[in-house]
Length: 285
Ligand SMILES: NC(=O)c1ccc[n+]([C@@H]2O[C@H](COP(=O)([O-])OP(=O)(O)OC[C@H]3O[C@@H](n4cnc5c(N)ncnc54)[C@H](O)[C@@H]3O)[C@@H](O)[C@H]2O)c1
Image (cartoon, rainbow, N blue to C red; front, side):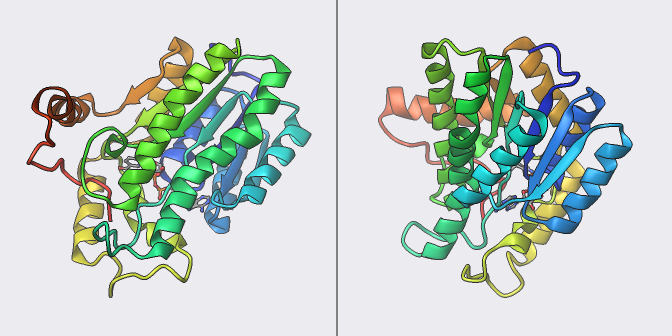
């Protein structure tokens, strides 16, 4: 997809971080922008900022873990702008505690899988049939993570991001088989300077947190991300370039992917065992 001007972008998780950067990039490219997020005040700020850039904008408070919310978002976007050409299924949460396979709370599983994985599923189900029917070019992006391709512990975040990666690979083929002009993009970020570590700000009450949230570890990691992470604007730029080039994978940190993914593949194909050394846990709770 080369031409964005006058077309429409829909972005989930648009009130912060990577989603906010998508919104600004879309506005700069002359797109109409539909912004969806669970955090109303921040969403309103981003809406005002993209309007200042000259974009037509619409924002909807949306919980991507709720199928009806995502369906309502699609209804609103198609009703206002007629079609959607850039769908970014990007909303995500890191989790709260993310214990072991046997002691992570069911409420945490529901929350993290709901936002990170089912949010993507609901988005594809609500938007893609209508985008296909319109017969125009378009892009469906989903935000996974390097944790979606490598191995590691059972934190719900990692499991959800694997689901997103495999689902989007499948969508890539489904679109080809259907002869669609739509393109799938899988974004696998490494460390990005966003608010992801503070995700418990949006958690349902039933999700237990340790005293002080993720504790000292979270604070250290948040500061580290903001010191060393990539700027969200650079990520948005990479994704729009991938849309122009027709690429599927977008790796913000190919050096991390190569090391951790190759270790995993080597374990699978030639050693019949998992690597002993765990990859660095950038995000997981
Ligand atoms: N920052 C990183 O290092 C990193 C690395 C890999 C992947 N990611 C992924 O990037 C995506 C964007 O996260 P970010 O890093 O910009 O973090 P962020 O916290 O800055 O932004 C995430 C946005 O999602 C929204 N959100 C949370 N729960 C929601 C819900 N139920 N419904 C709708 N919106 C909801 C938040 O309010 C927030 O605005 C996520 O999917 C995340 O997992 C981030």
